[in-house]
Length: 494
Ligand code: ADP
Image 1 (cartoon, rainbow, N blue to C red):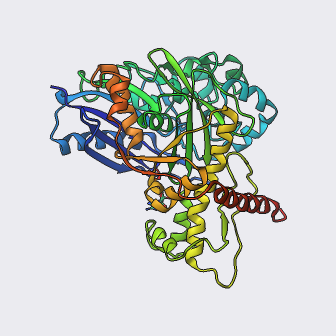
Image 2: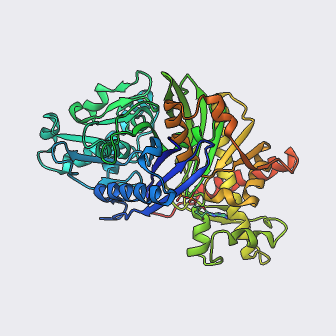
Image 3: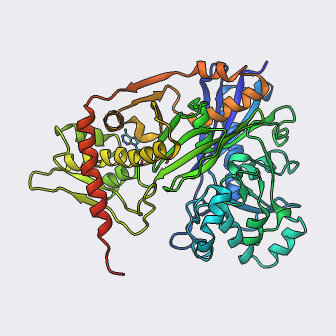
């Protein structure tokens, strides 16, 4: 009797396995850290074999914790850090270079060479030229390892994002595939024509022979024969896409924001892709029942990370949750506005040169005001993304679904609701990403009967409604706009 769906959530710093039951509730979890390697300033890599080993470990641990056998597992869903690039030998299954993690800047120079192709790339992939995406990382590996391009042309080397790498390993090398969401982050996949783009492959000098087959997010990827021949991988999706699905944002105009280290906002824009001129990315939300859903995506680089800075840099708090106690000691922000542009600003500014700035300090300013301003900065930056999303999509958003560590701050969530003037909903299950691929895998096998059934399973733990007037909200945002503008004028001489 199948009692569970197994979700594998392979993230940047850890791998997790979670068993979900018929009600979509968590039965067991296991987590293992994955070490990152920093070979040079700005480079971030990881050993793909250690990533695989961590997945094997957490899957085994999770089953043991639940006292479950493979006979009780219905199917598997995989969700993963996106864009991270692996190249391995088809015969031996051994990687030829470390996995280049999405954050890594080591292919910046390669991207600079393609700056004049920005429009072409955007019109095909919905992405902005940036070392985040896989194409320049893959080119970096092929340029670096002698003879690799020739070997790849002969079909002896394979490329994959982490999902492909795990599917390959789980199926004992029988399946080399990725899903449409992960493919849409490689910068090699045409999200309009739904195929690998010959022109882009030529541009980046990538042999087509090494690319995985692109399958729908909900689809039989084959048996996870490394563990058992019985259980199949039924779903694959990139983390942010899986999270949107986990929040059951199935309808056009539904939107979620994840408040992690950075913030990622995705809005379901339905069956038509919308290309943005304001720095939003266009991406495939998922491919289910033969239907493609597109999404707009915007990102804030420093979200919860500003709280980490208060803890580790300024040392005015000793744990992240303490920021809320500190902020509660004062009645308001005391006129303090904090632009935490530690690594530049993301959507909609895409300004790499701006640096963090705190405005409005007086002798009356205390650490509490700064804590409050830091929390508010996460909401203000998310509002900047939210505003362009509404503008570019022409859709007035009704509510926002939230998750991620910093969504545990009630102050932040209430403030966000106030300045957006909409309702905010936090689900009971905070593991939206893992839940998303569990829903997808279970939908494929009829473990969950329909999307309506899935939507009905949704449980809201907390909601926040606006508690200030529109005028008050507009005024606060005006101060923020001025602060961002001023921060952007400050440039240290190079
Ligand atoms: P990631 O998945 O990016 O590692 P998480 O979703 O685990 O991030 O969220 C971690 C972030 O949330 C940290 O930056 C931390 O500062 C912040 N955070 C965690 N708990 C709280 C809290 N109670 N209030 C405010 N921020 C918090």
